[in-house]
Amino acid sequence: MATKTRSFHSSSPDETARFAAGLAAKLSPGDVILLEGDVGAGKTHFARALIQSLLEQSEDVPSPTFTLVQTYATPRGEIWHADLYRVTSTLEIEELGLIDAFGTEICLVEWPDRLGTLAPADALTLAFQAGKTDEARQITARWSAARWDDLLGALAA
Image (tube, rainbow, N blue to C red; front, side, top):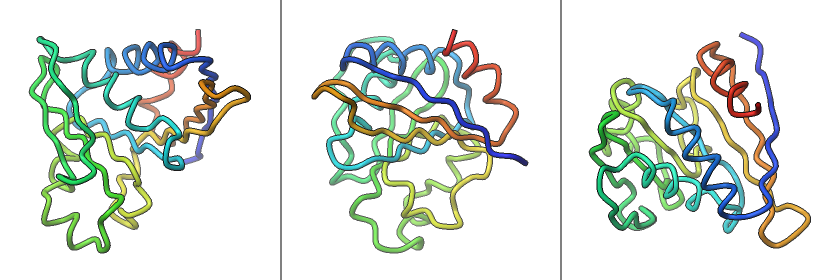
């Protein structure tokens, strides 16, 4: 499978949140999004906006930096938000149950490099980079599974 890429520019946190909500509206159980980028690049902001857009009632969406995984029940299915920054081995990831969740839940994974060979081949990777202004972000999507072609095309339009 060939890897495809598409870049999105966000000029503000609100625009990033709209992008997240647009993507969220198309997600299904079994979809995995890997969120790459430096500390402060916008991964958690994106994840919070995506999760909040799918919740039936507004609730706090904390960063799972210390809990490692937070789960949320939504009408589209359960969302697993994982922050693997503090994880030191793939054994820890397996103990979290994250690998099983990849096949049945909507999963957002920050610091996916910690997954190593456990990263799903059909996941969508979003790489966040600082833009030309403090609030701007460049978001580069990478994927190989055909499932993401139309979805990302619709978001780009």
